[in-house]
Length: 151
Image 1 (spheres, rainbow, N blue to C red):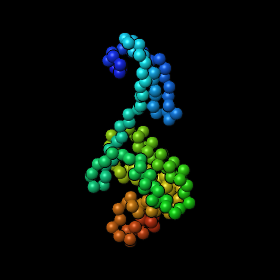
Image 2: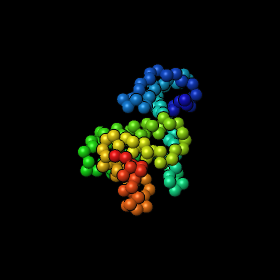
Image 3: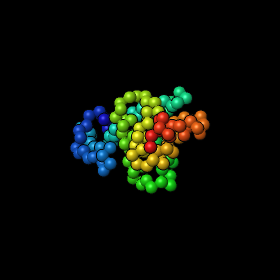
Image 4: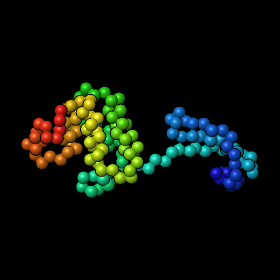
């Protein structure tokens, strides 16, 4: 660590504290050359995977997009905000722990569907109607009748 006062590259850590969030560590350091003290912060750098969309486009994984989709599916349904947050958190953790640098959007959508199926069937059907591609109403109704979307 470079001293902000004299530019020396040698210091010692005097004190270490984890912030309340647990994601940032604050360190108090002392320059071994000029004896001035300064603080630094360390945080974890998480490399988010790339999501491969149906049309081949790619974008960086976003927990907020998952949360938005779940909220839309659960709109005017008896699903609590904390449950919606919990589903988004569970899916996000699964994506990050997966360890892949790229993941198809369909896998993420299927994971959300699995979570919603346990919570609210109407929200499940709403999400499936957007997540899965249906060319017409008849195709959607066939899937609902047991060919792919079981209730």
